Image (tube, rainbow, N blue to C red; front, side):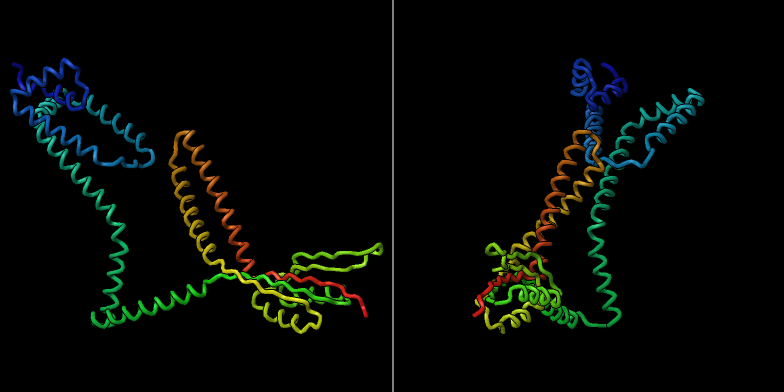
Length: 332
């Protein structure tokens, strides 16, 4: 039967999966009767398994080029060295192969520990910072833990009250006011309304005048004015003093829920867009890049639509619609 040293190279091929069926059969027959080689195979398999657990590490720029140059330098040095030294080194490795295997396993284990340590380090930074801040505050003020706890409870209650108040303030309401007026001087009333809107800091968004008869005499006018929300009540009081006012109506709509839901969707899409951008920077395949760019385009379109909707709602909240219909009446 062949000596164990004759199977060293074959064991490497066997563990790496490169052994031919004949070599595999030959080695397996030997492993049945050789506990030392069985142990060596098991140790190599464990080392390979541990190595596979380590994720792919991003290499520095020009790493491959520098590595190639280093290999060439080492090769030249080795060629200039004495053959006897190479033979001694090879014999040393063959005689201490098991120790090399154990050392490789230890290196892999420490690599894993270092990797997980780095992953946990960032997540612990905020917590550690928070603890440091609290400790510094305690050292500075000399406040006892019990007193600090009571203050914390009071702060939480105060914060909850402020948050509740902010929620109430965030209620988003739109107003739409409709007014009908009867007047003998149509042109004069149109000019008066335009001046009122301008003085209040608003503007006329749309206006329409209907003519009648062959002489094209103005008979009816429709005006859609945008008035700042803070000035709406003042405008309403002005129109209520009109003797010939026919009707008015104020419609208020709460859009808080729709507004908040749209904000949430917008935040999600913006985050998704950032993630897609990062993925695109790392993409290499042409088809992959095209697919990511399509998804980015669709996401950007959705973001623009939601931003436009929010802008329209903001304008409706800040500048309510005041729709005024002016009807010309005949002089007595």
